[in-house]
Structures are given as C-alpha cells and as structure tokens.
Image 1 (cartoon, rainbow, N blue to C red):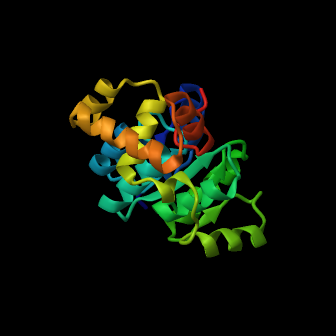
Image 2 (cartoon, rainbow, N blue to C red; image 1 turned 120 degrees about the vertical axis):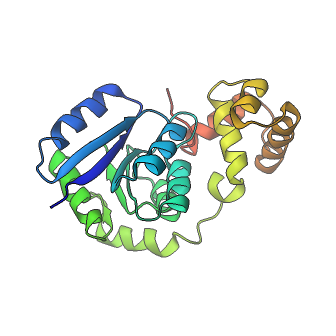
Length: 217
C-alpha cells in the first residue's frame, strides 16, 4: 500500500525535526518535504501533491489559513490539518472555511497526530479531542456565517498586505513581494485602515497578531 505523503509546514525547525523523526518511523507514512513560510508551502503543495499537509496556523509572510485556501483552490485532493496553539472559535471556523479538514492543538500527544493523519486520509474530518463534541457542532454550524473577523472584513489581498506590513516589511518591500506598485500597496493600506478604523502601523500590527494573521514573535 502506498504510504501517505506528508508535507510539514512550520517555521520552527525543532518542531519540524521532531515531527518528521516520528512520522518517518511509521510504515504507512512518508514526509516528502518541509517548508518554513506560507508562500513556500503553497508552492510545495502544488508541485509535490502531498496527501496531507500539517500546517502551522501562524506562518511567516502568508499565514496558514490563507495558505490553506490557496492550496485547496488549486488542489482539492490535498488534506490540510491545521496545527495551532489556539483553541479560540474564530481560528477553528476560519480554518474550516478555508478548506482544512483537521485541526490539532500543537501540544497534543503524537498518537493524536497519527490518528488525525489516518482519519483525514480516509476522507473524514478530525478536530482535536480536547474540543468537546458540543463545541465542535457549534463551530461547524457557524463556519459559513462568522462575521467581524479579519477574514470577513478584509479581502484576501488586504489580509496579505496587512500580514506583510505587520511583519515589518516596508511599503516598497511589500510591493516587490506582491509584484505590484508602491501606490497600490498604499491604497490597500488606506483601505485596510479605513475598514478597521485603525490609524497607525503599530495598531495594525497588534490587530494582525490578535487576529492570528501573523506570529507573535
């Protein structure tokens, strides 16, 4: 039987190394690649066509939720399991809306990671055992109607611009990264600030961290 091809996406090398070491010991699993940021993860997933992506929700340059949305839009057969320190409802619902079929808390036992990988590979959804059944039902029920978060207020491009600015990139660097003009980025930044009623880059950074668009560190 062909082993489950897995892509590990996480910007912490120690975490990736530990996870890969454990997964590679499984006879029915094979780690095909590791990535460290959102854009790299999207490219690797499209090129390598893994069966499962273990996706850190807080990825540099493009967060895990946006990366998942892009992967699923181009390769629906890939199963994404989100790895997160957050059990907050909005992170779970936005992950599900983006197309993830699994959600694990990063401090879970390794046995649960194996269970999640096997479960989603068989076509089912897996959410962390520490999220009660009643809460899961609530998450799924409201997944398509959650409002008030960055994911419902801002467009995909605006969220991408916000993340890059919040991570310390200048307007010029952001424009180069997204292959658009500086004026376009300035327009996006003004629209973001107007929509959020935020008036400084420092406040935008705090908002991006709070909404899970960019890592805290």
